[in-house]
Length: 88
Image 1: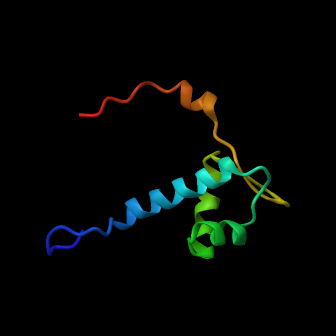
Image 2: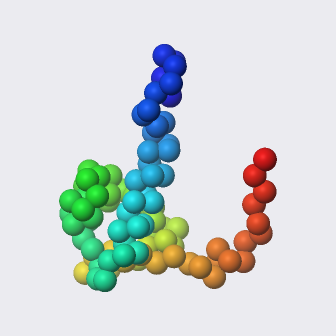
């Protein structure tokens, strides 16, 4: 946020998370693997940012990358075994 008061521009970390979620939504709804350029065009996210975010998603098991492109891959079994989070 800026020091000038209320700003509609989210902090960079929040923007990064939002972009990653947009990519996951596109990957989840795709019927086939998607390329980096294709994801960038579809989401309006810069290609270099898509590449970086996809690498993070793959590293954390949220997507799989192959020769034909990227697929969404959420490890639901791992998520289901986690303890509930209490927000205060």
